[in-house]
Length: 347
Image 1 (cartoon, rainbow, N blue to C red):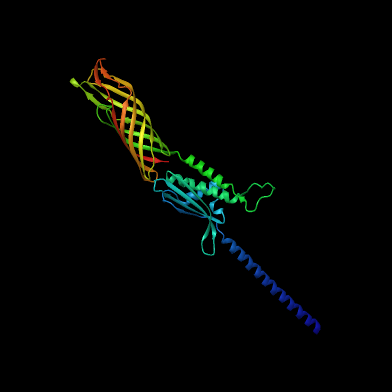
Image 2 (tube, rainbow, N blue to C red):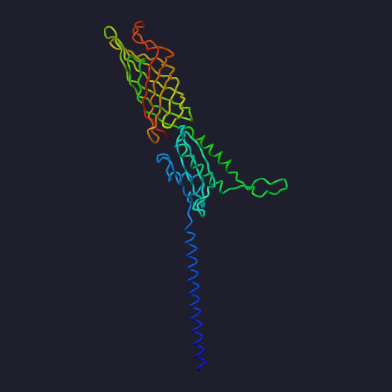
């Protein structure tokens, strides 16, 4: 009986020790899993540090554009961050500098720069869009390295691993700049004419603009308030002008200022209606004129700018308006003076 009681006592002690060891193993396992999970959660995705005018580039828009180009969020890129700086150069152009840096700092607290790219452009907005392309190309250059061709003996020499991404980067950024170089804009303006109508006439002008580098193309349409002329006995006419036209301009950008030197052609309708006669009739003539102007475009902020131009229009023909096929009522001057002031909105 005593042995049985002793045996039972030993069995319970062994069971208790086994249970205690199992609890310790469980605690150690949970602790290890917690450590691994906490270590893994410390990892983060790529970040973009931006130094640029606020109206030019913001981090949220940049992250969205990069995500579209690489097919996943920017935060899904590991191990690297990006530093972006867009600033104006002394010559009035804009420069984008992109640096790809390691997330992990060295012992001295600095971080290794993996690569640097610089792109110049005419405007800050142009480079803001090119920044997303440059980051996407940098990501691909990191993730898709290629091996240099093998040597004559069929083996690759040590240290010859290289990436073909820089050439792709140059091509992608170059193609992006080409695609982005045409900048559309719309202008609403007030315009005056002196010389085509009997007296100075105000009007409204609507323009569509395309600029690429220093070349600017403007398509326009204008309408002017009618003006009257009268002769002896109150006999005369009222005249109105409307036309469309095109201007090609030399437009180099110097910071916020763009001087304009333009030449072009306008074609429209010059109409006159008899006044002070028994049976007033309306006669219309084709209006055609060559046009030359000087002006300036000044950026107000964001995509808005003010446009001022002044110049002359030389009629290719000067239609004469007569009564009873003999009495001259009015004929445009040999040269008309034009002045335009408007607000331009870019897209």
